[in-house]
Length: 224
Image 1: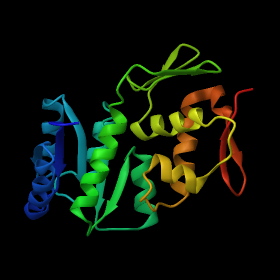
Image 2 (image 1 turned 90 degrees about the vertical axis):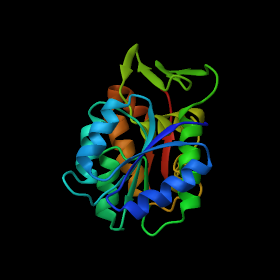
Image 3 (image 1 turned 180 degrees about the horizontal axis):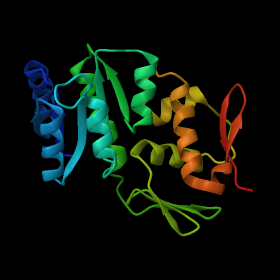
Image 4 (image 1 turned 135 degrees about the vertical axis):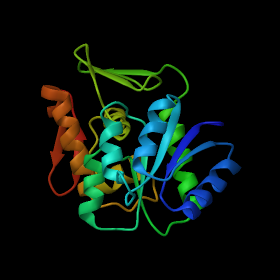
């Protein structure tokens, strides 16, 4: 997806320049913010931002606060950057709707690859729709309805539900789900999946029961 607009938020000018230089080489348009307050102002004054790269530790508003603010109004994909690598921080990020989580120091080339993968998946060509058991999933529009009622899903929740539906009836290990939904090179804790499944089930209401837990392994999507 050429010329997509990406907002890079980091209080370190050197880090912003490094990330920007690599993204510009791939023809992305990069907007910058050095603190959380400016980031929120830029985001809401530019309605066509395709993805956000967000640092955790920043003045005025930290990354968590920025994420909370944006997630009230938008499901734009968010990649969180952090110098911390604790499980608690990572789980908090996913609870808030973060789509990818990268610890510093990182390879700029890997970051760009993650950006490209997310943008490819969030801009599926065509009008493919999948309908099963009262659940209608439109991959092109990134929309889901359950019994005619629209669901508000985050980018990653949508990807997870799509993967479940496309593999309905199959037992899916947590490792396989991580590899396919969070990219093959994402080494995340299995609880990342459990957190997303819990939120997805809650949003789906009664239809959330279609996502069956396979104890000690993972999940299976079945329609009664």
